[in-house]
Image 1 (cartoon, rainbow, N blue to C red):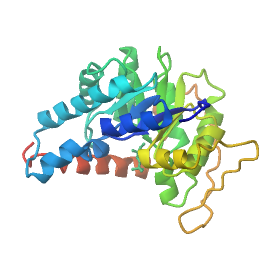
Image 2 (image 1 turned 60 degrees about the horizontal axis):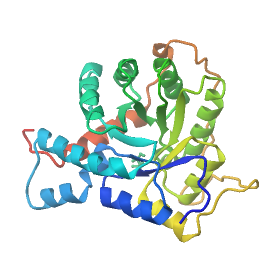
Image 3 (image 1 turned 30 degrees about the vertical axis):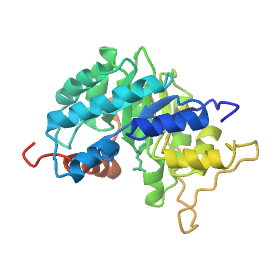
Length: 294
Ligand code: G3P
């Protein structure tokens, strides 16, 4: 078990309550959980239904999702359970908000995940006005993080923004630089947005998240298993993160940009190809469990 809890809160990135329970036993605590449509589609119960030839209706899928987060909810600490709305590239903010409101009522410690798109940001803006906690997902740029900050100003509870480290690494860009740059940019802000390092693929990513003082990191159980198996290493003062791809090639550094957090959120150029691809992947994984007509 982990003796000294890091300042960075640790969340399990998954969709299986028994896995969360196992990690909690291994580490001694779990601060929170993040889920998404791809992870829910991989839930063992849903996989069993699909393997037996059963395809779910949208309502059944939603019921399964609710049961999953209701089982996870009591296992985690104050970082809560992030639940993602089902959105494709055409989903309007009002529809996302309606889903978010319903999902927020499923458990007492919910955070609602919206994508870092124009409609996702609009939904977030309306949500924080209704005191619905939000986690802005599929963040791949400093501009998106600046827009999250500006759109949710005045939120009474922390807002999360989730930079996807591993997916930037996948295309040769140093994803940890995005976390570093957002932290530096937010240092000039009011602290209402917390950085949740996501798409963590290795212990090295996790240690770098600690070293950068990310408020939270969401981590697959496999990476937490590896961290535990190696005795829960922590970054020391000499820790230097070397962003390398799988072949050992140095990842491209992402330069810091001077952005004014006081500008209206609509003024930031938030388009990012990986956000679009991420939404398409979530839709495809979600639909793989559904009836054709659903
Ligand atoms: O935390 C976000 C995560 O679920 C996405 O991870 O590995 O699919 O990029 P990955």
